Image (cartoon, rainbow, N blue to C red; front, side, top):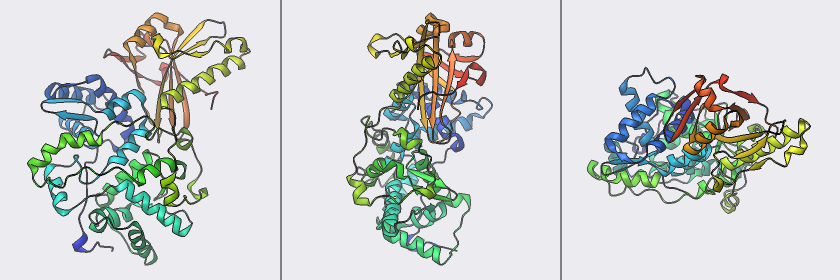
Amino acid sequence: MYRVPDKYYFRLHHPRPRFKDQVEDVIVFVASKIAMIGKQRADVFDRQLFDAIRSFPGNSTKRGKTIRNWETEISALFGLVLESDDNREPSPRALELAKDSDLVRFFKLFCYFFQYPGGFNKPERTVEMVKEGIDFRPASYVLNMLLLAEEKTRKRQGLRAEEAAHCIWNDKRVTCNNEEPEYCWARIQDGRQKQVEYDCRGDVVRYAKDILDYMVLANLMKKHGPLYYANRSEIAAISRCLRPEGNFDYSGCVSIELVKEAKPRWLRYFAQPKEPGFFATDIGALLDSTPVSELKPLPSVLELVAARIRLAKPIGDYGENLVLKHEVLRLKHAGRGDLADQVKVMPNSTLVGYDINSREFDGNMRCIEVKTTASASAVSFRQFHLTANEWNAAKTYRDAYHVYRLMVNTQVGIRLFIIRDPVGKYRQGMIEMTPVGGADMSFRDDSGNYERLLAD
């Protein structure tokens, strides 16, 4: 059984959300709720967040302690809430996710900034890490190691969670001394050749596996069987991860009091806003279904560092463009090409309360509000928010008003769900609505129809 030498052994860990199996659904739901709560006194904010989490499907019967655990895990681990004096407010990361529903970008930023020690741990544990000299950014290290291995062998190379746990996460040669990745990879290879056994119990490997899984949600890695591979389709994003910004400096935080004082600064560091082009989701990379076995090794590390970051469009703009093309083709396929030229995106400055002006086959107006979510897995996210302006437009146009819910993910590609007359559906009891800053909507399968997307 493999053992890290005692003088190098130190086990890293972080909070593990009880909702990990549905983390994408929960995070985008809670981010939208936090954005609507806004800046509040700590007690008011916490109470409203508690109520919001309880409203998540399946939580109504859970104990208060469970809901409070969710609160802690969401605010501490994912950086959705900022703290200052006696106040709480949505972080830039929460506001961005609530606006764009781009989970892939969210997890890229999460992986990019995630480090040990971090403000997500209990203060006493953070002090322990500081005193041990831990200073470790796992996503950068793992990607560097796999790319160096592929450059050396000219073959695709994967990593098992148990190898990552024992040879990376729990070894101070890596987490304190920043050991060159090639030496760590050599240890892993030596273990494979000698067929050493690793302790694979869930409580031993879970922390390394968590971060590797989050890297999959970020589309930085692909998983094939038990192995995690760097995702060739995301060369530009990986190149950015290889040379991250400096870590948050915990070097002077050698007491619980100092760690607590540093937490607001940590949260602002961890959830800091980035320009739109920083990890903008590449839809082509997200929808790339090429099997891992058919992918060639990645370019060298030097080539990756020199790669230019592609400026992809925000996911909302991508969704609007897809729907625009879909509507043109829908009319043309029905023999109403004469109406296709009337399909247009409405400028934001018009404040009409919808994104696209289209036409029915009889020439009547079809008003379309597009809601797009990008994720690595097939989320069951059944919520969307209409602003006050959009809700008023829905009440005005009724049957002419449509919500096009686009769900873009790696597993099933792009799915389109259309809800006609959301106000009418709400009044018929087919949609739940909470009047918060407009209308917070929850829908069912019978609230609308899935349709084949005509554009790709």
